[in-house]
Image (tube, rainbow, N blue to C red; front, side, top):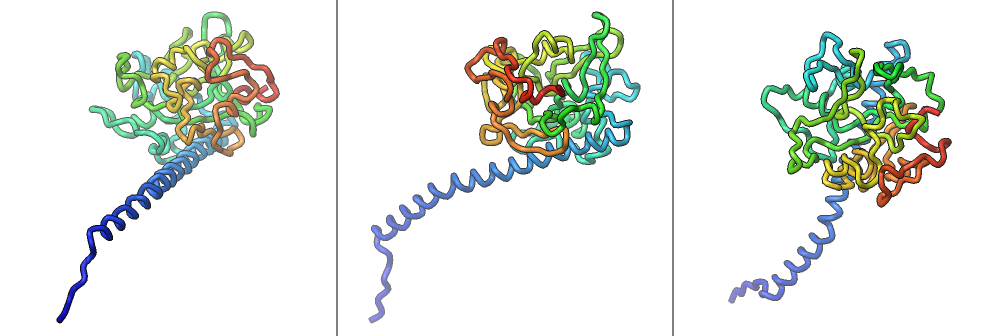
Length: 299
């Protein structure tokens, strides 16, 4: 007599329970591994962007690309009716791939009617330049705002000077507040030269009386609570609401590259070293308390 033995209901339930336990243990590990891989790709993107800007400087009398050039005569886009070319477009020949401007840790800017993908990546990048150092604005006579690119050799400490950071994406704007997909914010100064295009830069932690008109930093000083950018970014610290738009998507770290070419991940406190920045301190109370450690200027 040939008897076939089958699994009992209890045995099946035990197997299912074991599988469920293993899944509960392994799925978070897989998610962490996936996040770590994206963070590594983001770090690589930022580093390549920075190196492209350094190569650009090598071909242009040692000068970095302007954060934005206004009325060049070959501008494909007008912001607020004013033609302009951001740094992303200037360094394109050195990076070749516009996808580098998108951070793998967030959602790329979605396709828009009439907009080629390359222009979307160039005009709404997810990495921003520290233009306060690399491309400052000179408020030269109290009326005109003149941009000028810095030279590599002019920086006092390139290894400790922030060049580019991962920043908020357009998808992270607060649509409930009425910001459209192409909302960027810009300011166009007198004298026909202009100042900045905020979609392509990151905000410096401190803007005091010594730097008030340097790069018009009164518009880009939002490290701490209660700032306009916090509202715009839904008070979400991952997006960069408390850190002036510098995102903290890499396991609560920002992806940052430095003027000497190296890149790494830094927590907000480490990125704001040399200041009294705290996530519960008002942005208007954030000050530099140790200029020798501050990494957002070239002193």
